[in-house]
Length: 267
Image 1 (cartoon, rainbow, N blue to C red):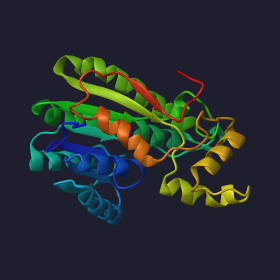
Image 2: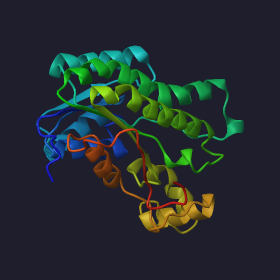
Image 3: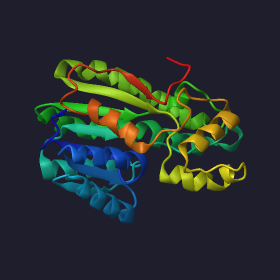
Image 4: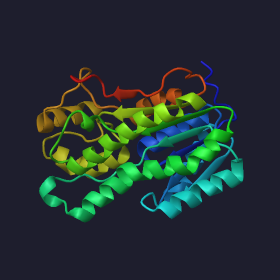
C-alpha cells in the first residue's frame, strides 16, 4: 500500500529513541524526509543514522529542550528554514512517573510542561508550516493509562489525559482546513529504556524484561491489567498505526483516540 509519504516532510518529537525512533524510521522507510527532536546530541546523531538506513532521503536531527518554549520555537524555525513547509507532526514526548505522595508542585509543573504543553507549543510552532503544505497531519502519543488508572502514574496520566483532550479539540479546530489530527494510546510497549529500567525488577520474579510475554505477565501481576493477546507490544507496532494516521493515505480519520494495546477491557 502506498501511503503517499514519498517526498513528504515530517517532524517527530522525542524521535531519538523508543517509539519515537520507530515512528521516525517508519516514516523514513515510506520515503519521507524526517526531522527528529530530542535533547541528547549523541542519541540524535545515532538515531539519524538509523533513519537514513531505513530509507529516509533526508534526516534533520535537532537538539531541543521540550520543556522550554523558546527552544521549541527555535527548533521549528530550523525546520521552516530548511523545508519551508511541513506535512506531518508526530509528538511523542511524555513526562516521568511518580506516585502522589512523592510529587510536589514542581513535579506537577514538570509533568504538564512535558506531557501537555510541549505538544501545545510544538503545534503552535508547526502550524504555519503545516498550513503551507499541500496536505498535513498531526498525531500525538498519549497512553492507555488515561483509561486504566495507576497510582504510580498520577501526574503522568493527568498530563496525558489533557493531551488527549487537546488533540480531540484540535481536530475540530483544524478539520475545515483539511488538517487531520489524531491521538494514539499505546499499551505496554517493550522499548530499550523500559527493559533497562525494569530489568532487575522483573528478574526478581524470574522474568525477562525484554520478553513481551514476560512483561505482560508482570504487568498483570503488578497492576491487574492484562491484555487479550497475552503479551506486551513492540515499538514498530505503534509505528505502523501512527504512520498510517500521519499519511496522506489517511483521508477521513480525525479526532480519534486509537488504542494500540493488544486488546483491553475499555473502549
